[in-house]
Image (tube, rainbow, N blue to C red; front, side, top):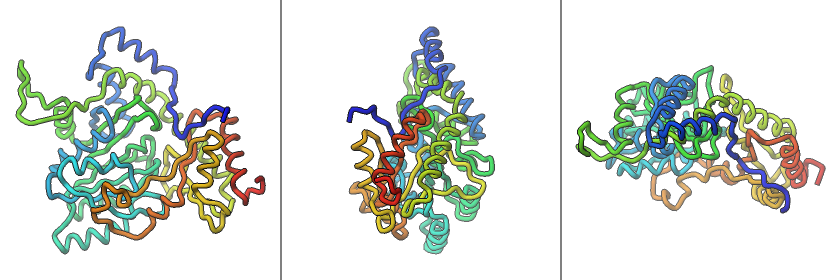
Length: 380
């Protein structure tokens, strides 16, 4: 274990971030708000094509605000894919609402055929969801045009959890564009980072103005602290936004680097029996935030967990795919719709090291460790 650890998804600075932070310190804008935050929000809007953005403390905060602004409250149903991160569903409970979980398709995103069929049933029974959350998992996206059509037909509010998909596009349209709300994350392991942080985006100026108000403790315009409702301390700091500005300088480069990592894994491992990579549908350009595989023990000669432990023994971080929410003790009492696709993906799926900063030597080391544990590679 003397070799340097290779991480799943480490922060990768572009070079301008420190200078940006120095400028913030020199100007003494060490505050939750300031010019760096304004500029970062403008950059995100221009990049994603979503007209209005507010920088926040996390993607979870962004989702919470989206649900509140959607009018979600006690007794409301919010539908969500079961295969997601806990921060993508916990805010439903913050609002006193309840989640309904749906199965995913083979690419890990919500199964739209299943969704449409269940919406038809819910419409007949008069129990349509107040909101639908879709999750762009590992940079892959569901068919956004189809979701827009379903929203028009059934009248739910669409929240796109694009926390893992900055830089992903379908036919040139950024992930989440067209949703009522788009959630972004800049956590330390994301494709770009502000060390911690997130954003909420919408094409509605009124909704984002209200989000900013709620995110700054819902303070009314008065010389004293006046509150007609309660809010949250959710705004992104100006210092963190300065880091984000430097990261936005290299976002397209980071997408290209992550895709190159994915392409090399696929070139080296894609023909081995029992290993499957997640394909991009036609017109999709995923950021490949994490490269994921599934392992079929019957044909691969090994299983997901054996591979993960072998990588860990070589001081290489990997991780199972997200454990579906309906399998989590905290959510097992809520309804789940679908089959066993997401359960099988969790049982067999593995996220491989996907750092944009990974060197060829480090990539060689990961592949060597994988070849050593994969009998079909002929190098064990």
